[in-house]
Length: 307
Image (cartoon, one colour):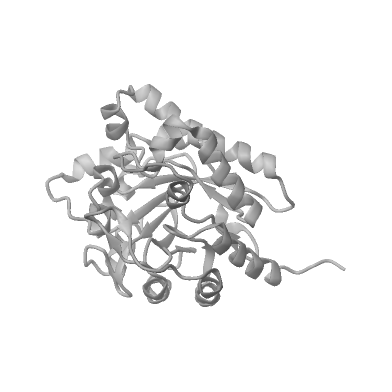
């Protein structure tokens, strides 16, 4: 297994998966979101993976962000079948990496969304699910880990509170599988979506050896720039950053509104993230293969070429 933050000069992560599926005509108005397509049309998921790889991505994330075991149970899947689906998501990404090939290592990261993502109500952006106790949060994150054993790493994504950070750390306390990163969604450059300080979020995971990297995702690029600098100041672990394309999210209508950042503007921001110390750089919602191609050009320009 190759940890993405070990790639040189840095690793290029893919961009938005669900938003790219939506552009291609898939209806994602479903509690499972992109996992609905994983269930119904896995070839469509593979097509997006391949496009990101061909654009230059080193790292592919699986279509499992909202594929929680409770959500899949509500769709009629047994726990065994749900875990098999998570393994299928990893396998699809892995086969795409092999098919596209290339001279650089290809890395598969299993996407594990916040508890709020499984509720499909936008609460992953706020961390406001006080009706759920800590033990249930820990169980939610722990129970899907067997589905991710074949990935190179696990991404716990769009985490908005120190409380959920602590729950993930507890879920991983005895974890012997792939290493993880934990990425936060931020309301500003110093606070997570719930209002907790980034220092508090980092501290909540400090004793968890399985969480090998920290990051920022699904946050506007300008906010991500400030938040990444804050994380770099308070925690020594490798940094991962994959903002959205800069539009605000309308939770009521489950969509982003406004014009996205252009690939060239996104790449200019990425140069700042790299100077801040980011080891993995990519995009989240509404970013596209064109954004990833611009990031890959930065990587290639920074890669020493043999004479």
